Length: 299
Image (cartoon, rainbow, N blue to C red; front, side, top):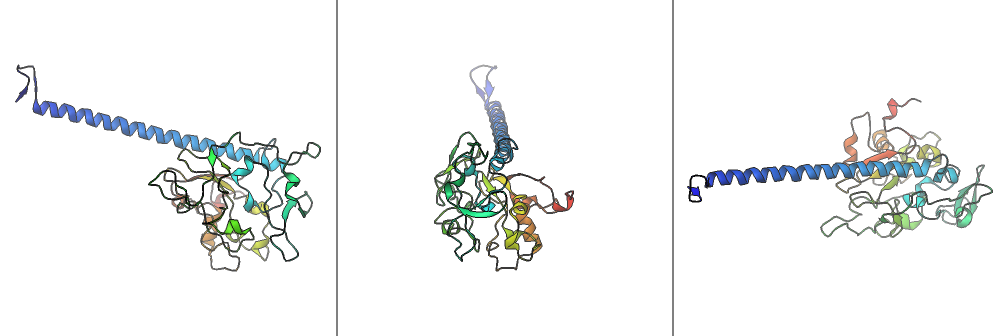
């Protein structure tokens, strides 16, 4: 059968073949564009991780330099928001039996209690204090536990941005994950979003993720914990898979966790080079160490 009235017309079969070829080419083009766009997002996320890491660790004008290393309050209180807003010293005092009575800060020599405004502004004489912003602008706000990125999306709580924590000496709004504040951020505070619409988070493993080197892992030096600090993007699937807080791991009375679980927590899921699957499609960048197995590190 000819399409048209002369010998130069297309047969129906030929027309179907042409349309099919065009459709296949179109699908290949769309697929290639989609792949290119996803690669561009991944590259952008990798660059963001480097910028955020530098903002914390820059030796000339980084948050930790201006605050003189790790602030005296537990590194568990550090968040990406520290780069964007006035220093929020939000910690717990030691002594007097009152774990919630004040703020713990560091004067280079010993820890003491001080009002929260102690390091909220830069002091040019001591060259100490918050001298930001260390990241020029926020690209969004930290979500509530029930927020979603789009109507059919899962909530941020179900995607592990609100881990439940037990046994840590933290204010109640940290601990009450589904109803209060996440260890990764407070709802509504400035945040930096990755290309897939999720906030970058700073993960610092709990003391329980480390061997009991000092008789009690609750006395583990902050510097040891912070050596394993990393910035994480939840990646294309939006699920924060990188292990840090296993259920009830932060309960210091629970000693049932084996060394493998501890290492997964502190190494972001990398053990002996073959367990990156624990991270899912997350992107991970450590602040002060290489992303290698502990057995491969030069000590």
